[in-house]
Image (cartoon, rainbow, N blue to C red; front, side, top):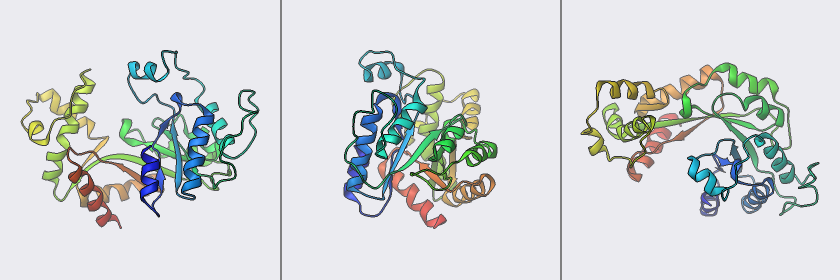
Length: 274
């Protein structure tokens, strides 16, 4: 719904999903939703999908109406969705008698998300883009990205290998301000690691939150997946990592407490990078 709203409100920027959790949807539904989006906004839609459930156990079962979720067929489901989007007739007997509409639309770019390297080979073989979620566990390596590139086979969705890397970023005009805005997310993740999921604090509440020495060590360790600093520092780091790992784009997830601060992160980074 968000992708549809943004596509309707804009004329030029590319709109992608990062990503749809395939576990909860049929290949036919995935195909028809993204063909419709692409029909309304041709050349601007990215079909980004992931294999993870994207939620806690209770939410997973609620989304599947109490049925045990199917977790071992994600690559096959993605391949079926791609065939239906491309107006192909799948070999699967459940889908080879159904046409995904609308037909003959501009194909959306297709991307497969990954966070450990397991999807790199599959993304390459299917001829789709590979989006690495660095903010999940911080385990990006050149070998993972090279594995994708070395296995890439051109497809109707993509002629050459394309990689983007997703980072969690809190940036501001100064490093001190960035630290202030970043602490609510750091404390939320700290509590999550301890099995406690609660509301995200305000920056003022986070500043006054009582942290033990162990808490501070854990937050310091989590900075591998949460980049915090001035916009100049973050821009320099992103450009350094692009050169080191050889990816095409960085995708930024930034969620300070206020919407004003969130938008400012993107404005500041855009000013430094472009």
